[in-house]
Each structure stands twice: as C-alpha cells, then as structure tokens.
Image 1 (cartoon, rainbow, N blue to C red):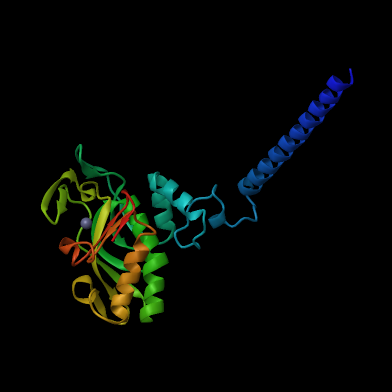
Image 2: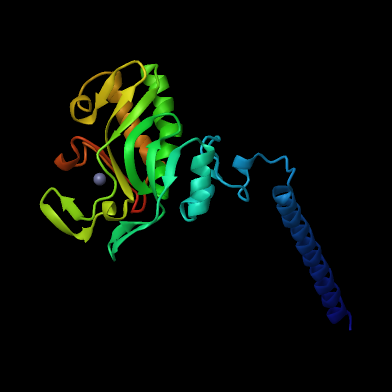
Amino acid sequence: MTKPSRRRRFLLSAASFLFGLLTLLIVLVGGVWWLLAHPNTPVPPYWNPLRELTVTAPVTPVTTYQLNRALADDVMCRAALAEAGVQFEPMEDLVVEENCGIAGRGRLTNLVKARIAAIETRCATTLRLAMWEHHVVQPAAEKVLGTAVSRLRQIGSYNCRRMRTAQGQDNGWSSHATADAIDIVGLDLSDGRSLNLLSDWGTDGPEADFLRQIGRGACDWFRVVLGPDYNRLHADHFHLQGPGWGYCR
Ligand SMILES: [Zn+2]
C-alpha cells in the first residue's frame, strides 16, 4: 500500500511543479508581449520586433528582422524610405516577361544624404542601398577620409539579361533582370574629391582603405557583393545584389 501512494505523491508534486512552471512561462511571455505591444512601451523601436524599420536608427540584433519584413512588403519599404528622406518616386510595376521586370518599382534620385543619378529600381534594392549608405558608407567616409559622401555613381540596376561570367555568358538570369542588384562605380566626396573603383582600388592610401571598408561593409546589407578582387568584369564596380547565397568577394 505504501509504495503506490508514495509514487502517487511524487507524481502529484511533479505535476504541480510543471503546472507552476508553465503558468510562470505564460505570464512571462504575456508580459514581454504586453511590454512590446503597448503604445507607450519603454522599449526603443529599434529593439522592438513589433515595430517597423527606421533606416537611420542604431543597428541592433532586431534590425535584420525589421529589414526583412520591410523588404518583403512594398508599403512598409516605401514608408521606411520616405521617413529617412530617401527620394524614391513610386512607379507602376514593370512587367516584361517571366524572367524580367521590376516589382515595387520606383525612381530613385536621392539617398539618405548622398545624391545618385536618377535610376529606376526596386524598393527592396533601394532600401538595402540606403542602409549601406547610412550605416557603412557615410561613417567610413567620416572616419577614414574626414568628409562625407555627396554622391554615389551608379551604372545601372535593371537590365533584362542573363548572367555574365569571365568565361562568357552563363545560363542563369542575372539579378539585374529583376532590378535586384545595382552597380556602383565610384563616389564623390563633399570636399571635392572623386573616387573611382577602377583607378583607386589598387592604390595605397586612405582612399583605397575606404573603398575596401565599404566593399566589406556592403556584405552586411546585401547578400551578394562582387568587386574588383572577384574578376576582371568587376574591375570598375561593386555589384551589390539583394537575394543570393551570401557570396562576398
Ligand atoms: Zn551588377
């Protein structure tokens, strides 16, 4: 008689312990949710996964999550750009054929601070470019060159074509066929200097350091980044591509 009742007592106390633990968990999760969802939450928006991305806010572990949501939602994407002062005039989607076109299309003329020659591209590509400009390019220019970047020089985003390789044409479609990439050849600085990847990449000095830093830093905001060290097709530009396999050279 004693053995089963001891076991029963043990099972009962184990069950009540688990029940207590579960209640505590529910209260904790509910509390955190309430704290994040409350309109007057003390949690800063850039630490709050329920809030939308602010391009110019500090980068936290939550930023990538907020960015991915904005990249997947055109309304959120355009709102984030507008709030950061990026001039991205909405246009109707470009539908060409199965492999070519621009979804979330717009005309970009101005990033957060730097200008850029008017270009038609996707909102997602623009948002990544704005994150790169604000969190990598401008801080690196300030730190390494003691000035700001006044203009990014691009040579195209949308181009309905297949991939090019050093050996010739490849079979797959280029990310340019959907404006998921943009090519940057150089930058103008506020102090009047002008940098070109083709002539400044291989030199010694702060200009080359700066170009290498922003090339590496582009990998934080684009999944594929190819530059002069990759192959001769990229000797004069950074190929900055949103979707892809995390390839950075
Ligand atoms: Zn490219």
